Image 1 (cartoon, rainbow, N blue to C red):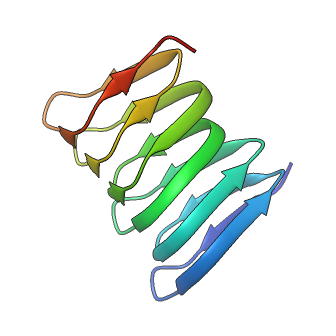
Image 2: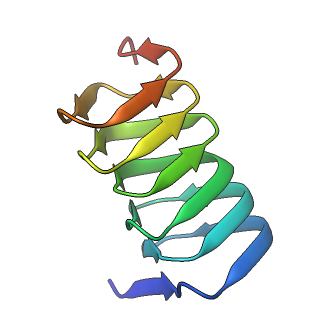
Length: 104
């Protein structure tokens, strides 16, 4: 599977869906539905509800996440919203405000 990258100067307002990995360096507002992995890099800003298999957050996410496998909030990541996933990792130094549901 190929990676798709949304560059740091790109702003998308709408719905993104697909079956490949997505790397966000820019800004996405709306909804994201993926079959595979979502990576929000440190420059990435996401204001969207997310449904995917795995999410790795180094940037900023505002919205609810429903991951079928795993959510990782790295030390430089910031998130406001609810997490629903069977495995959740929140690194020391990360910022998180919301609810966690691991009963998937």
